[in-house]
Length: 128
Image 1: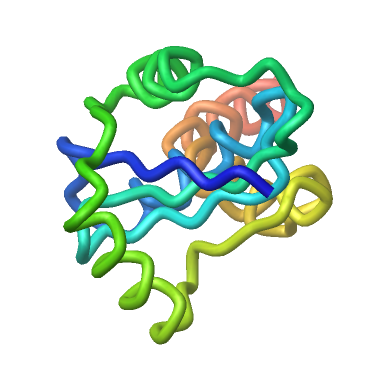
Image 2: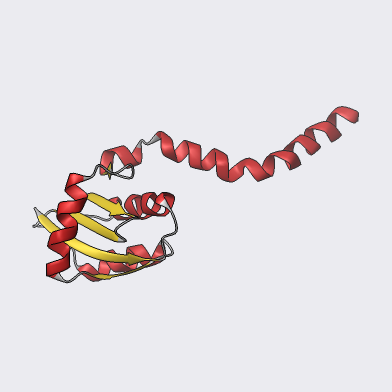
């Protein structure tokens, strides 16, 4: 397996880490991604046969609304140990991210502001 470590900036909470992980796991050739809000880092495990380059991963993070750059190897080794020792609530494999109930929860929460408008339309129809 090939491991790539990125420094991520722009995250403000664990949800940001989950968003980045979901985006990275969708990239062709990525087996698993582990993003840490606390360490401001991402550890990506990919197939060595895949034609996956760092620029693709950085562009994916940028498309998700954050900044990323390749980590230097010395600090990368220390962060890898921290990430492996500490379980992350934002750890998703490719299969888990595709069938995650988290997607449903996020969708419901994101659409909640629309509910008053829908109730108004239903109420308006009932009065007719």
